Length: 224
Ligand code: DC
Image (cartoon, rainbow, N blue to C red; front, side, top):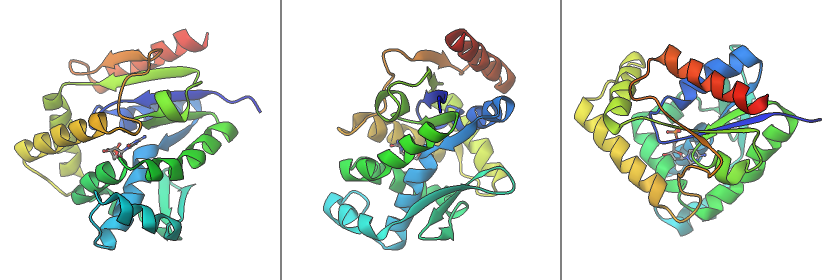
């Protein structure tokens, strides 16, 4: 089966997941949030009270971890960790840093690579993450690098956290974003960077509707 793949990469809080989910629903594509997969590993390491930066300790635990991605009746992506639904738990604010730290280990990235590629082989997908256009799906039909200023991203993340019932002050959210930007783009294994053939979209000054329109236009242009 010939499938279509759309890769959306960018730093945290750029609006990737909200935009990708909305566009996937409009186009009837499967939306794959790869950050949730790394969060699931991060969550497991957190529950085992292991230092997520300890590469040897994290790598030794991988054989114990079975990660599955399913789609609930709500149409949303659910993460199963050794059979248990951890979709809510992986969104706890402290898990962001665990996900970022474990995602720097090459063994963790290798462990999750085939699962992501398999999803794209069997479905039309919009996949968002940090290395989708560069490593996971280098032959994606459309590649977009979505970004916004750290302050704009912190502002949006703050609203999202408020809506989820786990509010955090602006300064703390901004610091977390800057720290994760640094971690995600300075690691040796598959760092966050724009693929040479990706289209850059900066949403700092754009509303959600404007960003969505810009993304849809890029897709139309590229798949014509
Ligand atoms: O998109 P997110 O904030 O839920 O991702 C959590 C962490 O996972 C992020 O800090 C870096 C890592 N990640 C990654 O390394 N590669 C991906 N494709 C997606 C996420």
